[in-house]
Every structure is written in structure tokens, then in C-alpha cells.
Length: 518
Image (cartoon, rainbow, N blue to C red; front, side, top):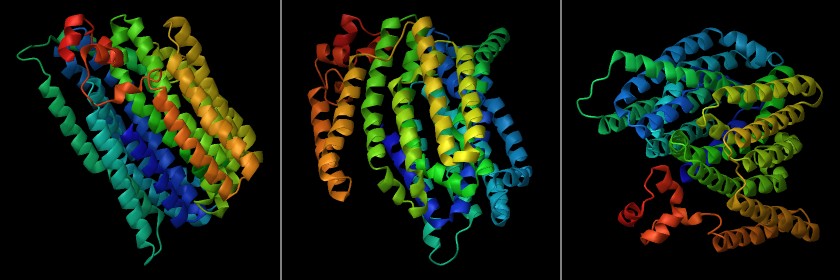
């Protein structure tokens, strides 16, 4: 969670630097180029961000550790090959992409093309980094993801982009230089991720156990039967998150695209929080579902959703309250995005209230259902964007994305309940939601109704809301399962109660094992 908070915070600062250093048109081109870069990397990963967690966890839980090497090769080699192909395609098609997304700004076409080509060179590193770190999480190792992706890459991006911003005091900043500064951290992170996976793999590799060719073929076939639908779903999911920026640039212009990207930047912070929790739970949930332990799966899902609501709902509610102030930090030209912020924040309240439902559905083996849900959501956002962006600009894109997010969470929520008999609405989820609404929804509105929405009113509301929220969360730490974050040694009974999800997921809930753990 700390790593995710750092990554989300540095992402907001990087967006601020780009928005302040580059003009609105060039900033819009930069955000469109990075959207194309992320889409290309997502396509290259072929859905392995699910398969490379699900299958290593499943093989280890079912005693087939000797097939882990075949599983990793089955997932990683195709990612590298496709990433190289897409990198070359993006490089050579950069002029066409630039013309499509910057037709209304011919003066930035050359810089936009150069920025796209710069990012294309780093696309294989981005795809491979994510795939390698995903594989480490299949071994329930979270440290490589946190230290390399959340911390190292984020900090390096901030330093490099900030360095380019400082250099503007002596020379004009260029879009290609900003793109290079943003992408170059993937180089050291990819190398270190490869070393991390190699170390973890050899540490857990069974001694002198040969695998038969038929076994390797079976693993490869099963891996892609599971991952295939998820490959399309992951691309559609990324398109759902990024295609709107490209559509705003193409249908509304680069300046509205910049406003939309800046206004929605807080969504990335929410997504990092979601990833920080769901990636920790994912391998344990896969083990629980693989062994038919519905009780542990339900406990994990509901506890994680309570934590997600506790972290993200205050952010969403505060972003709604501070929307004009938040946007003014990026420049006066971005204050037109207040309604965009409100629409997206309301949609994120619904999405995070459903928890990591998309991942739960995939871990239950329903990747084809997951694909259908994401395609429906993508159809909703593209359809509404095409209808609304020409008339409403960035607000039209926000409405399209909000409707898509609601559909992409309510559909799998119904499916998970019917197929796996799981739901996210445990005691902790309800307590976290009520606490967030009271402290950051109701209380600030009462204060601002009396003191106004100026600096004094907003400051007073925050000063009252934050301590009240922290104190109430501490008082309700039992229902919220916050004792799981304690680093103190506990007695056997209390530790078993506080970390029952962890122990149950690994099959260590016997009395003797609990005593040894204590």
C-alpha cells in the first residue's frame, strides 16, 4: 500500500510537471502518446498478468512445482516476441498515429511523431517488466513489485521528468525529451526484474526432477486455454482506460485531451491502491479457489474490499470537494474539468465498492465471462464517446468512461455471486463505506455550508474530517481487520484470529500450526 501510494503520488506530480512545462497542445500530444504506449504494452502482455499468477500459484498448491519452469516459458516468451513486433509497428506507424490524434494541431505533428517513436523503443521493456514482476507474484513474492515498479520506476520517472522540467529554465522543453525521460526508467527496472524472478525460481526449484514432454505440452495448452480469453480482456481493459484520451484528441482536439487527462489523473491513484491490495491477495485467492476453500476466498475478498473502500472513498470524496483547487494547480486552463472530476469520482465510488471483482472472477476460472464483460464496457465507452465528445468534449468522455466503469463492475459482481457464491459486502466493507461517507462526505458539506467553500471553509472541513476519520478507524479496527497490519508479535490465538485469511489460504489453520506460528 505504501508503494502504491508513492507510485500514485509521483504519477500526479509527473502529470503536473508535464502540464506546466509543455503547452496545452503538446501536453495533450504527450498524454495521447503515452496512452498509445500503454495500449501497445498491454496488448503485448497477452493477459499474462493473470495467467502468470494463477498458474504458478495453482501448480504450487497442487504439488506440481516441477512444471513451474515450463509454465514461465509458456508465458514469457510470447510476450517478448509480440512486444518486439508491436514496438517496430508503433515506430513505423508513428506519423499515422500522430496525424490521427493531432490533426487539429499541425504545428506539433513533428514533435508528436518523434515522441511516439521514442516511446516505441521502450515498449518491449515495459511489457517484459510487467510480465516478469507478475511471475514473481505467482510465488507470493510482493517485494520485487513494490521495490522495482512502485518505488524505483516511479521515483526515476519523477527525477527524469523533473530534470527535463528544470532544464526548461535554460532551454525550451521538447516533447521527445519528455517522452524519453518518462520511459527510460523501464530499462534498469526490466533488468532487475529478470534477476529477481531468476533468484526466486531457482530458490524454489525442486532438485533433480525431470519433466516429460507431454507434461510440458499439457501445461502450455492449459496455460493458454485459461489465459487466451484474458489476453483479449486485458487489452480491452487497457483500451477502456486509455482509448478515451485518444478519442478526445481525435474528436475534440489536443487541448481538451490535456484537460481530460489532467482531470482524470486522480483515477490512476485509485487504481494503484486497488492494485496494491488485489495483487497481494491474488495468489492466495487463487490457491483458495483451486482447493475449493470458499470460506477463505470469501474472507479474503471481503476483507480486501473493506481496505480498498477505506483507502479510496476518502480520496474520491475529497477530490470532489477540492476539484477546483486540484485543477488550478495544473494551470488555469485546466479548471474547465471540474465536472469531469465529479463524474469520474462518483463512478469510482461504485467501482471500488465492488472490490477487486474482476480479478475474483478470473481467479475463479471464468476468464471468458471476464472477456465478455470488458468488451461490453468497452463498447459502452466508445459508443458514448463518439456520440458525446464532439458536443461536450472532455465531459462527454467522462460520461462514457463512468458508464463503462459501472457496467464493468456490476456485471461481474452479479456473476461472482451466482457462480462462485462470493460477494464483497462484509462487515468491514460496510463499516469503511459508512465511515468514509460521514467523515468526508457529510461533515465537510456541513462545514462548508456554514463557513463557505473558500480557503477557510475547506481548510476547516479537512482539519475536522481527517482526525475524525483516523480516530474512528482506530476505534473500529476490529471490524476493519486493521490488526493484520500490526508488526508486533502476538499470542497464538490472537495472531490466528487477526491473520486467519493468510493462514487458511496456505492450509495452515490447525491448532498445532497456529501455536508454532505464534
